[in-house]
Length: 366
Image (tube, rainbow, N blue to C red):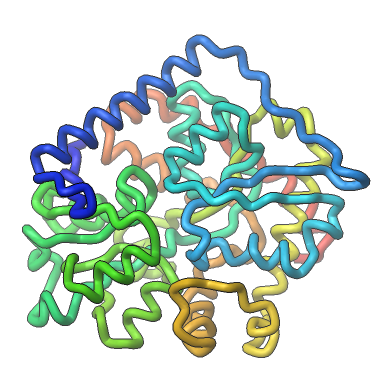
């Protein structure tokens, strides 16, 4: 896979300088993962009791993204507490750093797309996905109406600056596949690391980037203010299947197999809490959503919040189940981006535990 040269104005680097810096950082991180896998005897941090509840630390990236809405609602609606859990939602700067926290044992659970479980397994860390939160990646590509007023198709993005929140995560992979499907090698665009939804909002409105690949509510807010035109929408099943050749799953909960097996009842409770939230979202109306509106730095008003949730409704999982087809699509995507992944794909079939979902579905009548 050819690496995109990620540029950053804030650090004042030229493209070649930043490319070298980013490539070195990536190699160092991958080397660290290999070292942990080879040298460390896995001893996951214990799930400890906090009073009459079990305490879990759950890592996620960009807490401003509504892709995490089911988790935030599970916290606000009391579903975690009702299942006997105390869950700390800890924001991480990137999926790579969250994955590192999981391998180190400093966090118990990772909220990230399913392909992260495959990547961890590929690097020697025995990870499993226990519940699926989103059945599409939930990313949106919006083109600046100010900078690219005559946009016709993705070929017009050659040489343009595309903002990406995570330079080495799901957004980067999905964007790369989207460009390849359109016949554009990823190195023919300039992917700009924008750090967070807030930074992305400023970068788009200041004209520092020509397009943005991000999630809601940011993309809905920009679209409604006519800052961008949406040209790729991976909130929908139809466009996700068209580009990726099937259902590419979005966020789910990932943990080490040893941790899950040692604390099976705790993880059963965690899965049940998330599925209660997914079930609540199915029928939640505007008044229900506004009652549990979370503080969000990129939401200008309540109407944008409601519209953003409506835009995401189709993408949220109906029942937490991760299908075998979705697993295969994730594996195929990783293989397209890194051919070396294909040599071990057969060994990665055991990265899903749907048994917790099966039990919760029966209990919750989903």
